Structures are given as structure tokens and as C-alpha cells.
Length: 180
Image (tube, rainbow, N blue to C red; front, side, top):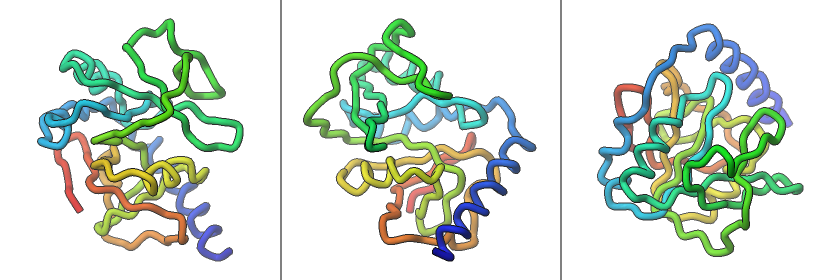
């Protein structure tokens, strides 16, 4: 219980810090990573609010002919994946986020998963929004997992961990990719 409370306090602090230092940057450089260049099936997301922007990444991946999959939250807070062609007409609002419409893919075999995060430590441990949805996805996948972060969101301090927490393979800021 102490770890969960500590993570909640960190989330609140990191969200406030993110708002305070938010800038409109681009993470487009990640598409030059060998893991992404060699991939055909990529899971990504549509950013909102103060998250690192994914619009230009998603557009570039579609232009490269990649199959792009977006998450849709199920009632049990698990994620299902829907292939996306880039059209705004195939999206709907679910609270603060846009989600794809259409049939969910049953057998998704991603080579790359691009995930949101609030902070990452130097061992690749990710602090997300707290729902556990992405941890359940990451646990089941052998894909290369990369989290997008703003400046200053990769920390030397170890993040508190719970048994369900999953590591990422890499983290990207607007300038660099750090592999773990």
C-alpha cells in the first residue's frame, strides 16, 4: 500500500511539473530507429493534453507504409487494438482521449509499441497514469517498447515498483533515444 501511495504522490508531482515546463516539441526522430524502420506492425497512441505529441510520428509512420494500431479501452480497463488509417472520421472521444472506431484486432503481433509515460528511471521502469492498462499490454508482448517523455523526465532515482509494473526497452525525449 505504501508503494501505491508513493506512486500516486509522484504522479501528482510529475503531472504538475509537466504542465509547468510544457513545450511543443517533436519526437519525429524516433522513426529513424532501426527497430521502427524494420517494423511493419506498430502500436502507438494519440496524445492529449500535456503528453508528448504523437501526431507527426503517426503521420510519418503511415507515410512509410506501416500498419498503425491505436488503443481502445475496454470496460475492464484492458486495451484492445484497432488498425488506423489516419482518418479523423474513424475516431471518437472517450473522456479526454480519442479512440479508434471499428473492429478490434484479435491477434496483434507488434514489432514496436510506442507508449506514454510520466517518468522513466535508468533501468527502464515506467511510471504511467496509474490504470495498469499498458503494463498488461507490455507484459504480453515481445515487441520493442519505447516511451515518449519530455525533457527531464528520465530520472536517476529508482521509481517505486509493484509486481505488475513492466519495463520499456527505450525512452525518447525530443533529442535522444535511451535504450535500456
